[in-house]
Image (cartoon, rainbow, N blue to C red; front, side, top):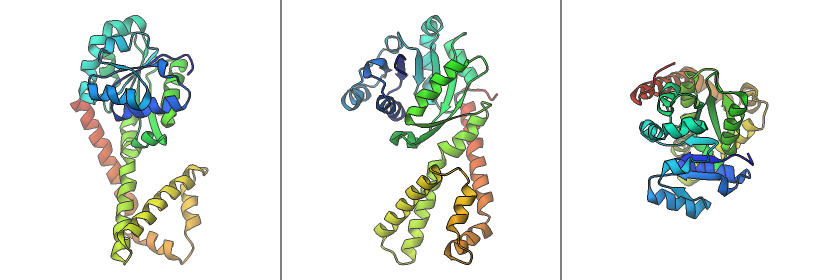
Length: 277
């Protein structure tokens, strides 16, 4: 990424997280331009990351090889449309992390010939431990895909999906996923308190267990069933707990939850003016 000229349109939380990750991975501040309408956000970028941000998006994208669109979904069209002539002249990659806004809608705002890629990162990107789902239409070439993946890998892992529709499942699984684990951790805290632990002790145990389990899974070969079995001694305490969860149809409950989030992702895409593929 040593020769990439990058522009981030939108200096909010995810935009700042991405810039921070890129700086940690060796990108120089002078390679990064930011277009941001809010003066307070521009000041934060300068103070925390040493990045100069401009209120003028046209000026910010002037030298860009790749543009990260990091604005609210409802603002994506109004941000891109005034830049269409400039985008068609230079044809930078437009990498959108605006949730739910479809490729067709983005291409319509950018105009013909501009390569558009969609990305769905998740909140752990804020600490460099995210995972991003990526989709690109067929006309985006291998080098452009590689550049987009490298940008998102600065804040964690990147996984390509074969269809745009699959990004709704990515949103439900990994985008919303941290909240599912936090809910489980909360429930574990409450159970510990009900059984007599002080609340701070229960919180420390639950949070440390969540963290440690994640590290074990991340450092493994990905066989989650085997990891679970290694913790579960026959006739032991873990087996008793898992039987209770299974009796309550735990797997189906999670399936229904992820399906509900997927449906909502598609509903929001329609609301933001995108069209399902």
